[in-house]
Image (cartoon, rainbow, N blue to C red; front, side, top):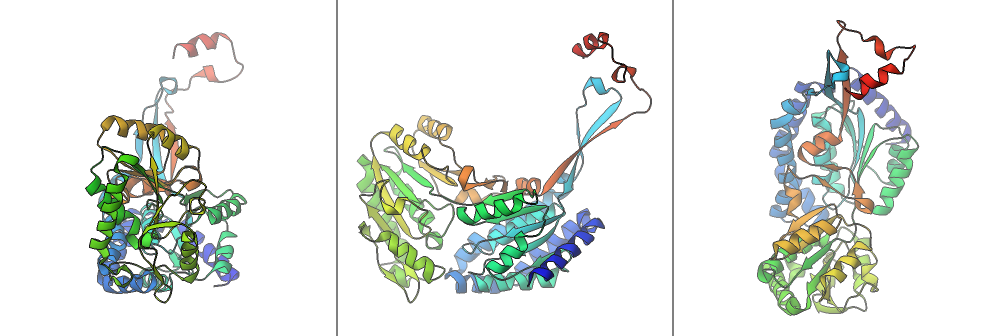
Length: 457
């Protein structure tokens, strides 16, 4: 789609939004119901597309992509009537004989730009929030996951007129043409570098943005943790989707006294999850393309491999890998890995760990494994991050009641559940004044004697 067609599409959506039709409660519910029915009826095709793009197993595709979207739809629809009601708030006595309300209004026409690593979930979940809030939307899936992009385009085309929801497929040319348009809100999920460009372009139109980025998310394991359970949960969270998860543990900090036990546990979990030949496991996803395959393989060069390290360029698979003797000066610690490679670092002083992590950009996620409540409270109190888990990984994303979003360089804004509705909603403040009383004190000419009265209100 060229720039002129994109411009016409945005104009058509603005015209349609101005009619008020998309913001009615009935239209919002109908949009959500339609999405749920289409996804349910075409579940197998969606799973096939995810297998083609990323090698995801049927279970992983359903659990991490389809289920999350269906859960968001059902949660939003169940609470939509309450969310859309105007909310009365207190009115100060100085405004006697008045009432105050907050009205939830949709922003208007929004752009959703999604990534390739969870191409279905990270496209549809923000779209669900945008539609629940009563917006029109243009969706731009990633060109790196073409099979899923095509099925999303087909779904949206069958469910909606382009003036309500539309999909623009393509690459950088289409991305730039979309960003050149004046949107009412942009939701972008992807890399930090591209996020900067999105924000820079949006600033030209004073468009508010939601940026879901990434970064190096730490995983801390202290000497009091349940090591066997921690090993299993860390291995699952790290190697899910072949490590191509924005909230995957990017590196591991483990207390020296339990390092060997934890490493042995992770190695054992890898074998149980993916067998003795992980490169051939149907439960193990592949890298999205050769570019990312080569990049991750390059990060391992020259490092000390504890386990794994093998790869197969023909199938774009890299073995689940643990690296030892890693320091902050190691090349692999200079960028987000986004692959099935886990650097392991040891510590003896937890305060030094906190200093090292705090000295770097705030991560999208942080994971803490400990058996001490006091340490849990201390770490949660001093570490800043988007979201995370205590004694688990990843699963904080799988609840409608926890916002998903970053902080600092890992992003801004959040969605999921009510937070998603809020993100795509402008809360309009209205004070309604009675005509029965009009206090002359506020009108000129002013008298200093009125100050005393205001002080006592």
